[in-house]
Amino acid sequence: QVPLKPGRSLMDWIRLTKSGKDLTGLKGRLIEVTEDELSKHNKKEDCWICIRGFVYNVTPYMEYHPGGEDELMKAAGTDGTDLFDQVHRWVNYESMLKECLVGRMAAKPIAAPKGEVFLRMKYCLLYFIPKMHNYIVILVVFLKILTPDLVFKSSNYDWFQTDSLVTIVIYTKQKDMNAELVIVDCQDKRLRGEIIMDDRSYLVEVGLDHAVSEDVAVNIAEKVGKVEIILSKKDNIHWKMLGQPWEGHNTFIKCTDRGLFYRKCKLVSKTEVTHDTKLFCLMLPKGTHLRVPTGQHVYLKQIIAGTEVVKPYTPVLPFLPLDFQKPPLHDGVHIYLMIKIYSRGLFTQALDHLQIGDYIFVSNPEGNFKKSQVQTSEDLLLLAGGTGFTPMVKLLNFALTEVSCLRTVKLIFFNKTEDDILWRNQLEQLALKDERFEVQFILSQPTKDWVGKQGKISSSLLSEFVKRSRRDSKVLICICGPAPFTEQGVQYLKDLGYSQEEIHAFTA
Ligand code: FAD
Ligand code: NAP
Image (tube, rainbow, N blue to C red):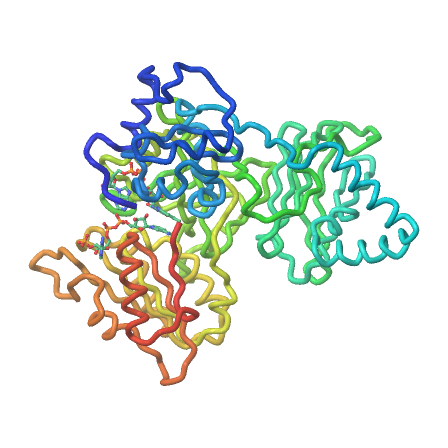
């Protein structure tokens, strides 16, 4: 992120798009754009970019781009889809840039003249037909190796019914399948079941033949990787088919190629954590099965001034693992988010204005943190800045309740003032309760009364607090906070001799 000039915030951009100004220079006309034409618009004062086959004139957006003009210019006059997907595929560019739409990319002309193509096909057939059998065998073997998608696609789900139930069975052939890897949404006769396998996603997505009740059960046979989605029929009639496939039905593709799916969640409570930070409790719809894995975030989507705005947030628990309280609500129904409300924040202001009972869209989880990183560590060090504390909540809970090999767990928590410290009381209680856990608060703008540590993230502070419990102990250091805080922290840690594998930085 780069600092934007005054008057160049997202809200200012939304206002500009609603002003009726001609942002493409084409007076509302949509055109077909050839590659040649696209490549001519490659300057800051005249910049077109193609995303997923649609071309946008992003010249007026330059100064509003949170990542800066130079980042946007990397895709100037070209197809920027891959770059966009790498950096922020979650940003709803269709909505944000709809007034900048120039048109579609024109279909590419076929390179070889028709006659030549036919000649080549004839030659191929004459050569291949006698040897067909051998080639088919070789082809199948190659397909199996090169395109697991196709192989997986051929037979991987099944369904059966009783008088009252419909069960969809998915054979993932994956060991260690678990509830966090299965996301099911069943609303208004639409069933969507997504299974995550490493960096790939398998989807069952159908418009069901008949109505089902809102209750959906998910059974997972972890060892054999069998997943059952059990629906209750509304009427006890025999179904002739499961339903009509939706576009993504029965596909097995990279997670990053799958569009984000959102469901509407109800705001059920909002409680103060500090003067500017609140704990929002959202309730998933009844037909949804979704568990956000430790270290992952979701995207929230709201329509603000007629534009869809999306921001990432990291779910927490309702409280830290203190045994004198009720067990944390791992009920699979509620999602807790600890969110700082910025006085001039576009999204958080709108969020703060939601009333109990209002709805907000919540996406599927994302993120590249792997729990196994913790399971093999002896020392876990958590460096958090402000709301960068949020991924540490589930991480702390997981480490202290499920990882027996951990000897020390230390949180070094950077804030501006004492009033900004999130869940200070609970953290201090946890340190008293569990001798493996220690917390250190460091303030960058303390009052005179503060007797604790003071300063900003620095090499000397980190060398004082980040230590292995033994000379050769296996350590994992997780860091999260404002982007420069995280970037500097990672650099200081590397300078102190920690390897890339020992550091996990939470970023977008
Ligand atoms: P904007 O309209 O974008 O900004 C308005 C003003 O607010 C800015 O001028 C600035 O003064 C201030 N501001 C905005 N964003 C930031 C920022 N990121 N750092 C410092 N100042 C800022 N936030 C949470 O509160 N809880 C979370 O659990 C959480 N999880 C996140 C997970 C990920 C992966 C990422 C990348 C970010 C996360 N954030 C979280 C930050 C969140 O996504 C938004 O950036 C934040 O809520 C501000 O949005 P806004 O639209 O209100 O502010
Ligand atoms: P904040 O209160 O502004 O800052 C927290 C601490 O970090 C303060 O001590 C602050 O010191 C310090 N800090 C801020 N900017 C710094 C910089 N450039 N260099 C070094 N130290 C710096 O923080 P916040 O408003 O809560 O923001 C939290 C951030 O975490 C947001 O940017 C959010 O996007 C991010 N976040 C990321 C994730 C994720 O998974 N990626 C999850 C949650 C939150 P100063 O006195 O110097 O300001």
